[in-house]
Length: 378
Ligand code: COA
Image 1: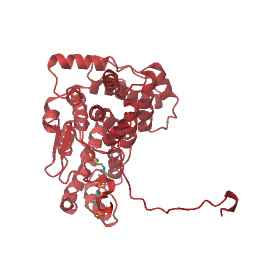
Image 2: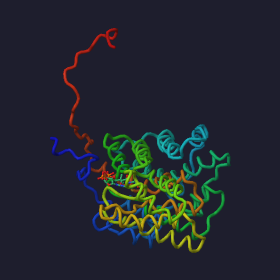
Image 3: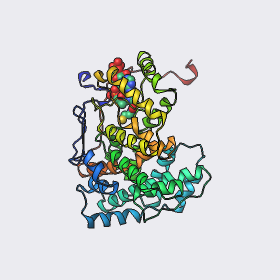
């Protein structure tokens, strides 16, 4: 058994899927066969969500209908807003999102994981509601009134509008829309796998997706984009970046936003985000952090590239979000409002051919230990 053990399940085949392909050797990411670059250039998040959830890019009529279904579900039940109001304002927005996601099951009667119609309803409800939950909690913690959804806007623009209380400009909306497209799906990563594992016990979709949100919150997964900015902020200038990187490597510390379990070349999403960041900074003014990030990437190419450690999606996303005026602790919740499409698609796929996940472990503890009476234990 020991020779089969793979820490972190690296290289272990844990399922079959037709949803996303991540080719880490050639830097290719496909959603249902479409390269992510194609989708980022030509599609909205709603089109991509339809692709992931239904299996094909929508026709205009299908998109109109799908969009209307989502728009009808953007408003949160008043009781859910009340739950968010009762959280301490210091709650991390990912924790608030996890609470809100799980709480949806109380408002929309517990779904039977075998009920196709109910599962579709849950999928729509989650895709439509997560942006509203994140925006509502952000307003509440700032002591500001919650902004109602505006159904004249697409999902990405409406999220920015609910967050900031004003309609975003067209460029920011499209940029943010592309960010959602880039984060919508990524194969059997930790949070997607978590959602599938929880779903495999036939827990309902809200319980499964709340668990996926929890999984995404960690700094080795979705939480990395937050950590990238924290690290960049400790470096005073681009000139200092190479020495900082050398020190991090020598002291065996992780550089956030670099490295990936699957990609051994530059993450294709990081390439797109870097181009977007560069475009945004040339039109809206640059930030020293972008120059520092660039300097780190250049030096890391030489120092870490040969080990297969390259920028991942989180390396540049935070810089783009910051330029869009989003606070650092919203970065991971934004990842979640995009990834809910991929998570839900995987959950639906799991339900089609389910077997409960039950791996094994190598037990290395003691055997046959006798119980010492309570009053004799030292
Ligand atoms: N900075 C410095 N060294 C890194 C590194 C990084 N970001 N990522 C990996 N390495 C090194 C490790 O120190 C280790 O070196 P060693 O063999 O000398 O001990 C080796 O590369 C393997 O790393 P490991 O953490 O075991 O790889 P993994 O496949 O388990 O982990 C990540 C992948 C993503 C968790 C890891 O690269 C990481 O922690 N990156 C930073 C966090 C991040 O950006 N996460 C977002 C992912 S999208």
